Image 1 (cartoon, rainbow, N blue to C red):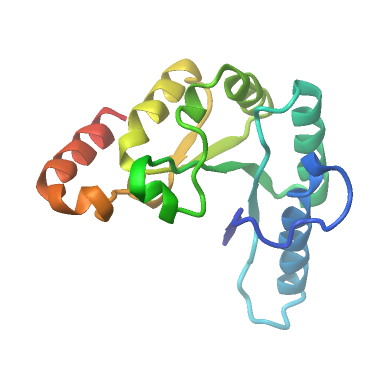
Image 2 (image 1 turned 90 degrees about the horizontal axis):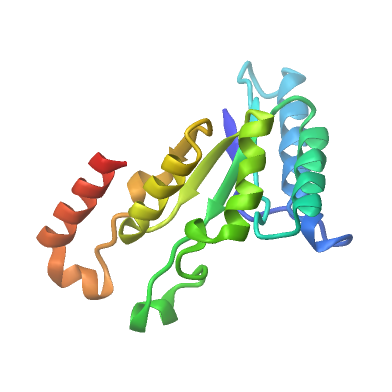
Length: 178
């Protein structure tokens, strides 16, 4: 299996830019437990996808990626960014709502460039109205493997519920373009 970051088991102490490394350390521990054979023959957490805030200073991004690589013990594969954005009333109900246009942000892209240099992938978790931002990111960084999580986050709640057919067509078009 591959462990994909879930904002869990983060370090309780230490520099903020390294807190997410705790989840990578945890996943490596799970892999070590599975490797004992006591839990059957499954190969668990053979790949680990972590989290880094690419908007940080490039030196901190590099330090965080180095720390993930070391903590994963050869299992580190890439970064996932949980990046849903909505506006209006729906935004009030969303516990995870990043700044609009995160994937277009120059600072984010500066840090993102580090993935290709290291041969790591990128998992994008967002909502379907943002799929154009993923396409733009893919165009700007053709050497980085981008994995679209959760089928591009097809929204069907809030104002999107009453426009189901239109929004489905928008999602379908955006996925095809991507």
